[in-house]
Length: 238
Image (cartoon, rainbow, N blue to C red; front, side, top):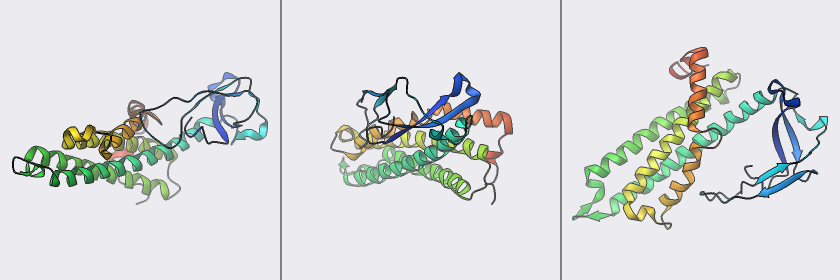
């Protein structure tokens, strides 16, 4: 449960009467009878909020705690995933840019064999790949943000594109920060270096809000049902 340590209530996606067709989102007060904190695991990243695990035991809700309507849960959850996946795209692209800035500055300063390591082609090529991949990921992110922000966009199309954003941006950031640590060498493995923290922080972005494998499933489903237009065509409403 993201930010569960400071939340006042939970959004619970559940199947009414066990029927997936009646999936519904409920608002559940954190202090409601039957809500119990199980434990608060410690994760590799160092976000300010915790991710505690809660158990629900005979928790009862009333009609006014239904978000939307009975059976609307999957659509609401998909809309939420669109926002979360685009947000992860923005965060990972920003972090990747920071990693490149740090790596370039270090490579210009660090000297070996009488010259700055930025002058060595092995380092130069890593920095060039980082820059090009960030540029491509940012272009995708901005395109989908533009389409989503215009309003009236096809929900299924945006959902499919948001999966591409999360997949490309999080995977790109993972490759960029791995190269950043390599540029720093042994120093990149030290807790005192920002790239070490970025390495830990960015790993989870390929997992939560749908793993990279889940994003590929969503993209594949879009291709099978509606073809490649969402990915290869011009932005809608342009």
